[in-house]
Length: 316
Image (cartoon, rainbow, N blue to C red; front, side):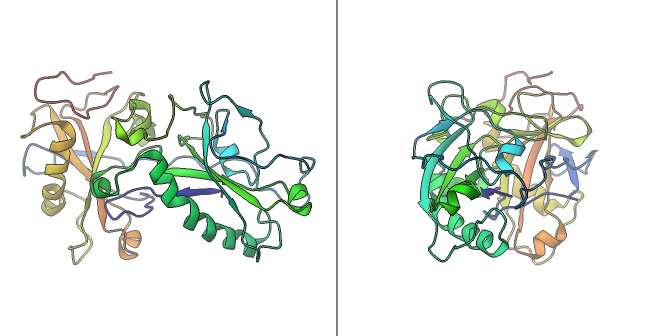
């Protein structure tokens, strides 16, 4: 899989929230009143991985340059080893923005698209050269990281020359910022540019929410919950309760109020949290994603971020 980046939990690590339990509580310190299924993770790409027998494009692809843009993307494009699509004007509709072009380590002598060792070596190099630059490109404030929830911008894709170009001596790799597709049928594009996108409130479509049947959706789609904050729980000595743990509830309260633009709870909202799996927790992902929904279970369409005390809920 040719993706990199962080899925920010409070621990600042990539956390896949599978098998987690989510519980919502209304008001401050009250017992749990609403149980919601955990969100279904994005459906992985359906394209079979490339093999040595897969026909490859002809040699001759030009080396990429920082600042180039390409068309809308889907999971099949993101998961491909090579991307030979033509560039497009960045001022027009596009799906990815190249923020870094690097040179493969000279010890990589086999095509990383099929050679496991070469792929692992390249993955380490990509992490070293692209991860920090990705956050810088997005204008991500590392100081604010512990309180930022997952969104659709925290992963990037990286690409290598085709096998034919590699055989002809091409050794570049490129890293692209993009909006993460959430299922195999979705194609995503960028609203304006992703450069310094965290400097202003994120577009609603870039935020992550939970829709019907627990599906993860953009917050511009009908949903029941919104991921609005994350918290660090690294002072916990044991895995928290997945249902109404008062310590997690208390840790989420202030970050959620801040994200909502509130100083105290609204009676029409319900607060909750999502934990990583116990195995992920044990591996160091000691954080929680804090979520908000309508207290009466009404479906929403739009973000709750900055809602304030008097604004109406964005009901679907």
